[in-house]
Length: 204
Image (cartoon, rainbow, N blue to C red; front, side, top):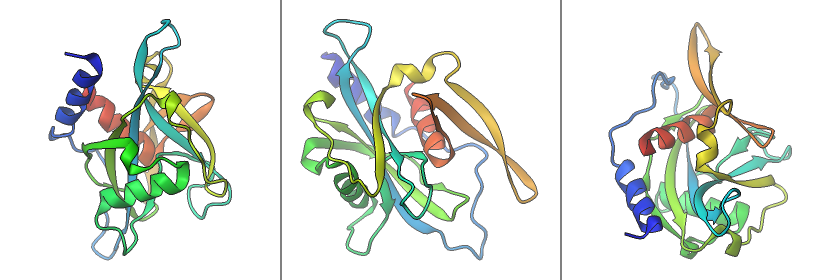
């Protein structure tokens, strides 16, 4: 079987596994979270260490200082689910087109990850998709107001020594673990770190 098809099938199967987020804060009875959606966009990029070889990568963006929330943070393309969105996947695809210029026809949605509640009052529904073409042939057209930078990060990088660590975050009287990745001089953490960790755990 072609290695790209094998990886696609691996991701599709992995998304069906019953793997919840561990030790996450849950919304109180008086809290009505804001529904949001993100797209974990995968693609094949040229491997840095092997001539002619390709490897799977994930798209990470850095938000600008102009956005209302999570200023300057590393994130997946996404945002609040709007009334016109048919479902969370439609919202994730719309936000991806608006933020980085990738249309839905350029990718295949493989499934979803569990919804995630955040300390900032959102419930995030992550969709997972993969580009139909290599990342080098899909130019990104970023929204200057929302996105400062974009990075295609090889999945293999996340397993290298010194990239990942677990920290703790205080919320009221409790402390919660957070997953942190240091990539390209940037800190991936919070909801993005939790979603990324959940996906990577499914693929190992």
